[in-house]
Amino acid sequence: MKAGRTGALTVALLVTLPMAGCGGGAAGSADATSLVVGGETIADQKLYSAAKDEGSLVFYTGGSEQSEKAVTEAFTKATGINVEIVRLAPNKLTERILAETGAKKLGADVIRTSGEDIILSLAKAGTFQKLTLPAAVTSAVGDAVKEGGLYFSGFDRVYSFAYNNAVVPKDQAPKNWADLLDPKWQGKLSIVQVGAGGSTAALTRFQIDKIGEEYLTKFAANKPRIFDSSAGQTDALARGEVSVATMPVATGIGSIADGAPITVAVPAEGAVGYPFYVGVGAQAPSPNAAKVFASWLLSKDAQKIAVQQGDYPVRKDVGTPKVGDVAFPAADSGWLYRADAKTMLAHTAEDAKRWREIFGYTG
Image: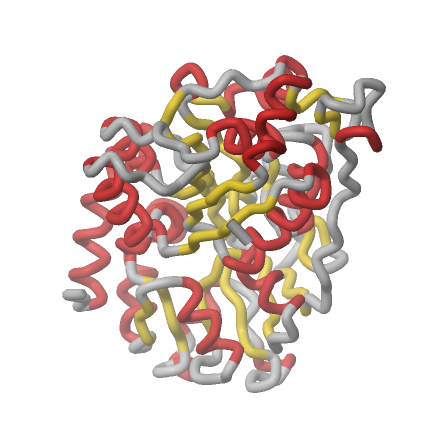
């Protein structure tokens, strides 16, 4: 394949990832050669025909393997266009993209990654081409489109923490961020290093700005195991090698769907949301399929999948994400901490330096 906030909420996720209903081509359009999804025209006849002729595309992503597989399978079902996923942690993915862009051998048709510093470095390097989105999509997503269509925000992923429910009894499980400072968790915690990507940069900003820098010092005193990526950390949590781990909610939901004994927490102190950006490669080998896929990611059906994975959508007409049967607080409730791009760019390097000092991390 080329909650209210009346107390802490911790919900065991025993879920699968149902696909949002997708319809395209003859199934969803009066014009059988256009791509219409949920009543919205995603690609006109000429573009969709050219995309189908290409037949496949390559998708570079810093998102979790489980969540992106659900997305690409839904796209293929709707369009008949296959997607090959290349998944790396955002920092490693950036290194690869910049090297390929510089050599004029970029293998990506579409790129999805997190981190304001990362997306700006890619844009500056000439990684992306401008995308003209369908009018119906543009009106639905508002200011999610950046730099005149050079890239766009696809959703806000939520970073919380989770525990192994086969190892940690329910009555002893942590519910809030403050619970992770209990000495009983010494040597049983884990965290992903601050330089892994936009997710860890956002988590660090949240912990410093919302909870307080002393939180990180006390967390570090519990001697957590430090991972280079969420994927490795999640595997270790599922195997019981660590008991509690900071974690993107979508990563937890995907692992639970695969049978992992994981419970994701919805802490009363709040959680951090951080955008995942999408752009079409300037050297895209399958440019037409790339444009269709990128536009489809902002369709109502694709945004519903994001909600099912615990992400806050950029559209306002697809609902609110949930953990199990419990809905997250509204995006504007104050529970979800979001630092704007200007703030993140101003603090990312400084926060990373302080994090490394606190944790004694030299990797």
